[in-house]
Length: 161
Image (cartoon, rainbow, N blue to C red; front, top):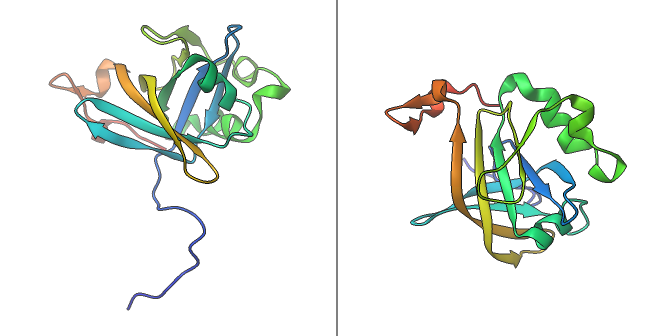
């Protein structure tokens, strides 16, 4: 039998991802988002939600792009730090020794250690209450070769968080 529950919260499971962004001065930051998912297959688009009071929010607004990273279970410390520490208090990625490389097509960085990185350009956004949902057109997808089958990402090969 189904029972009514408190409507606060969100659907689970939610993908555990890290998003990287860059401000107009070239400063990088990474954050964990509570909302992320596919929102179109043709063309491919991804949606992320960011609370406007978050440090990274203005970076997405300024540059209109972001990179979504899938995270391995072995990267729990990276995920936790990106989710619990604010970039306004310092460069958390540098403190962790994360290796960043420039994205190929968008003005943001890629965390090289993550198995998959999805470069996105913001094409629209909507305020849904607590979060602004940024819709990003997928510009480029990077994946480690060992996670591919027939040229496509094989999620069964990735030990995702």
